[in-house]
Image (cartoon, rainbow, N blue to C red; front, side, top):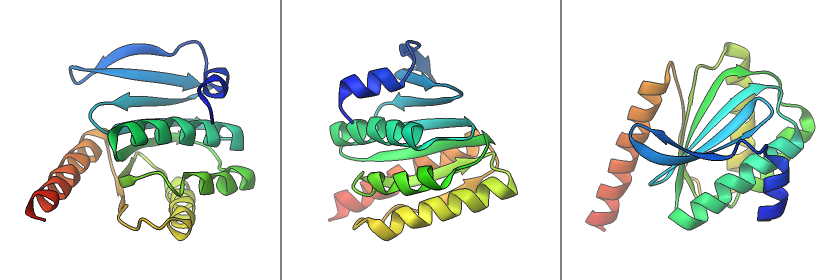
Length: 161
């Protein structure tokens, strides 16, 4: 998705912000939002059902950030996730080439965990990069801690190579 289409899909509430003392960029669309947090975290907040258009918009933003950074970790707040309709599940295949190196989902209900597992499993089927573990954690703090550990582990492996 090009930059113009992305701007149309997201509301005018795109604005610089800070999170944990780091300057971030937050984009919102309906009840959903994506926060791009340097060096390589995309925080996705899902509130209500997510349409195919919304899914494609989120993936386009994450893709652009990942290409700029070389990789991305996803922190997904699923506390308010509604449904993921079939067309949105099909749209997830557009994310197959994004260099996602870990996904931490927190606050998901049992039903949301099942949906997220199916969606992330489908993404794994279509990608050539299979080093994207997906974990479910109870809260944002533990999810952020997992991403921090995952990043350190990958960085240590890169240094050792």
